[in-house]
Image (cartoon, rainbow, N blue to C red; front, side, top):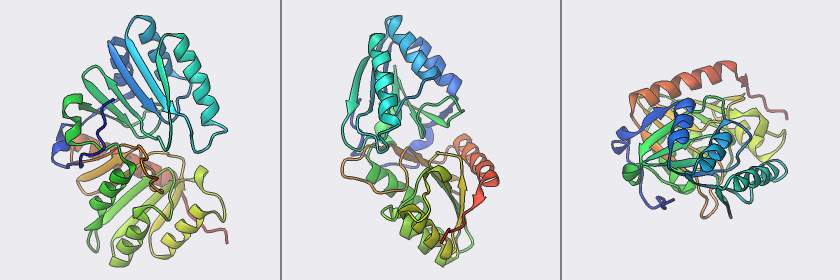
Length: 281
């Protein structure tokens, strides 16, 4: 897949970005002649089954998964199993070295982007014409997080912003930014996946300081990654954590009305079912 990491993200360009349902993505896989899919991890399910079926009917299929996942006990074993099955069906497979976390698929003339890992849970999947992707997309975690921060940075007193991230850390550019925004009088809500928070750990300490600064913090079950500000959103595969050199994640900004509406609705549902963060110390 072509390297898009050197291109800046453009809000206006991103009007070409559209929503695709999981069923629409699966339908595209079922009729595709050329598929190049990348993921951090690939669990058993309909996407893996569709890749196997596509290769067996003669489509050209390649799959790249993370070769050194951050939590090796689970994802590494899952990827080993998935790659073995895919190879058996004739899929070209590869394991990416380094901090590889993108979830992106080129299916014939379109790019599909997922902020999770191609699950069957009704993920938010975006679709971009492949020939226009370089205008709106970055595949660098550092650039992706910088674009997320840029969306929020100029928010003013009384404005409302919302951030969802599977995990959160001190080294993210969002950590100091969210403290600054809260101090400025911006209404900030942050929802983080509770499964990633360990009492007394680095993430727990970061969330405690944000809460003390006035950020509304809740722990939920979602692993999605996006930021909301009015009629603009940022969405990507990049968690609000440290961006290691060369780390691969996608991210973009858009004003596309359907995407904004869906993500606002998703956040409100997640927030309503999340629990208030309480520091254990």
